[in-house]
Length: 425
Image: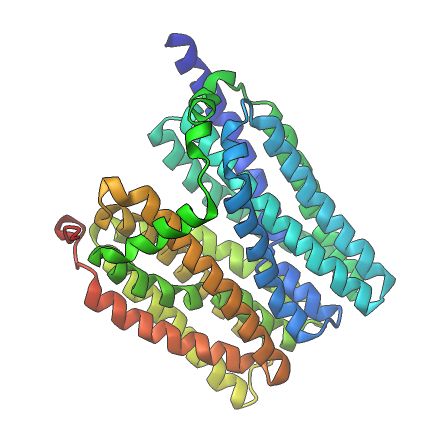
């Protein structure tokens, strides 16, 4: 026990540094903000730029469905996690190499492939990290690591984005963009190296191996278990709210797309988007932690209202033809990043409050299955709307869905954590 405690204590600073470096890498090369912005700047069709969100989610769905058991059975995970960081960095390099050719069909094909691989690898990494942190880091330290990642990573990303902007502001757009992606790739590689520095206990995966044969279920059995969750009233209420929140979660990539449409040729456009999203992560941690302690409903209602109000203001400025200032879109992206981050944490905590212990795992699997499928279809539909008409119409749909989600959260959720509703069958 003493040796295990000593290992855990030694691993915390290593993982703290790795998580901050990884956050910087993900912020500077964000698949939700930076890559869609670059897709528009490289003159990809708007449908392709918007559909990249769907492509990434399909990759994540495949990882969850087909790779979860093999991930759990892996005896040591730090090398695999380091490899995923290197793969993601390599994907970004491949995207920029394709962009350098200037051949739009090739860029489109490579971007689609890159987003699929990033979705696949990122979800595998999330599964491995969940297992690794559960085995090697205590609960309180995990919480500290989470807020260090958001705060430290956000601050470093802001500083680096501003530094790169100052160095490259006189350069052509491709040079500026490739430099930013290059810095992101360097941090992905550094994150992988730091991951290798932790001390891992090989015995952490033994339980997964023992339960391996029992975990093999047929597709029909999985589907029956998922559909069976609708027999429970708590699940039906939660699903109504959760389905509406899928549209709210799409606000970040589609707000980034409308910003890219207006500012993809600006020397400050990409930097402003990175700084605003990084600032959103920085602010959201301490802000929502305080509110979440008192009321999950308050976070959900305020967060959805923030998305709706910001989208409404953005649309008003857009149709009046006065949305040419990059600061307007930067502020909008900052607000929705704060809102979506808060909503994401609150809905997960609320699920733990209302889901009975014996139905928690099956309920979580059912929710992931339905919401990811809806997210793929909805993001593809919004991408088609953005391509055939304009991105503003997709934003208008997100605004309407956010208002509906706000009302639903207010009516279905308990106002206080202490008075969370008892699950009912």
